[in-house]
Amino acid sequence: MAQNTVSTANSEDIAFAKALHGDNIKSGLISNLRSKNAQAHNAATDTYLNMWKKPSAETTEDESKRLDKYTQLVNSYYNLATDFYEYGWGTSFHFCRYYPGEDFFRAISRHEHFLAASIGINKNMRVLDVGCGVGGPAREIAHFTGAHVVGLNNNAYQLERARKYAINEGLENQTEFIKGNFMEMPFEENSYDAVYAIEATCHAPTFEGVYGEIFRVLKPGGKFGCYEWCMLEDYNESDPVHREIAHGIEIGNGIPKMRGTAECIQALKNVGFEVEIYQDLADMDDSVKWYYPLEGDLRKCQTVRDLLTIIAMTKAGRFATTNLCRVLEKVGFAPKGTVETQKFLETAADALVSGAQKKLFTPMFFFIAKKPSLTQ
Image (cartoon, rainbow, N blue to C red; front, side, top):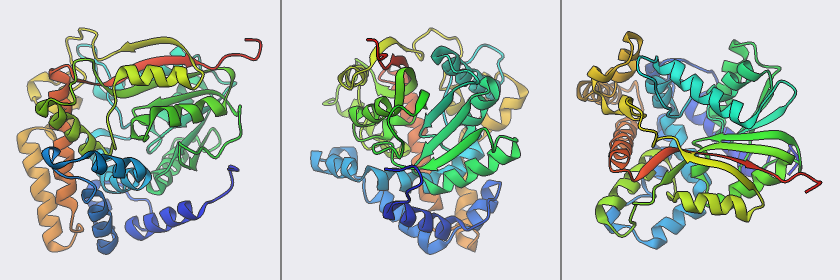
């Protein structure tokens, strides 16, 4: 597909995003919730929640339906969750490692810098960010390396916000944000010097599908670096407790099906990549765990600045946010379904912490893979 082509599906997504969120970019959770179109929000909520059942009631057919409708699943999820993500986490929607005493946002940036440096991104490169969210990592890596970064995302609402934030940081000429399906990328072969993905390709129905597209658009000799969400070796799909954790991660994060690290590496090899390095960065014996902000334990805050981030995840913070949403719904300042969104995000947080503590899940299975050069 040519880069400037706007498919019928994209046009419909863009129109729905405008109907749901409005034309103007706003800041702040309450302002964003107030601007929602109630009818469109109800449709997005129903579309998303109707794709899920309780873990014990789910069948392989239910999973297959989500995999077949992954674009609808993921778009519906981010139409509902994006404002809450920014409210609670900032504009870089990912986890990271922490040094003792390290500020939350500094650690987030360092995680992005590490990936860029590991790939070897520099100012002479044209780089693709697969699943760019609202562009937090793209902007940080553009600043850090001087590279021209193109963000690919299938959610029209997030793309509008990404473009606005890039202008605010003076990066409108160094970044681009393009709507497209990462299983059918709207780029020519051999278009990019480097590609990265940060906790995004887990939304794909298959690893091979998205990795194959990345391989296609990457120039020969170019590298693909990623932080992937994976279940770990000890995960047992037939164990009800394990499956409930994986299901909570899936429903709480808009993921059609979680997969293992071995499947990840094999998929890279199957599409033609040479895997140079892979490692679970969540398993580094860090004294400060990657999931500490989700635990809501104020005693674990690394800096005073982090208190605002962690407070939202405490029991009191969750209670306050849920009841604020309930009041806003009741008085008409937030559309119906806002409380349901808050609830499945809480389900996500609990499942992520439980999966990490039981050593069943990682959000940072790190790898660098290379597309063979023409001489090879």
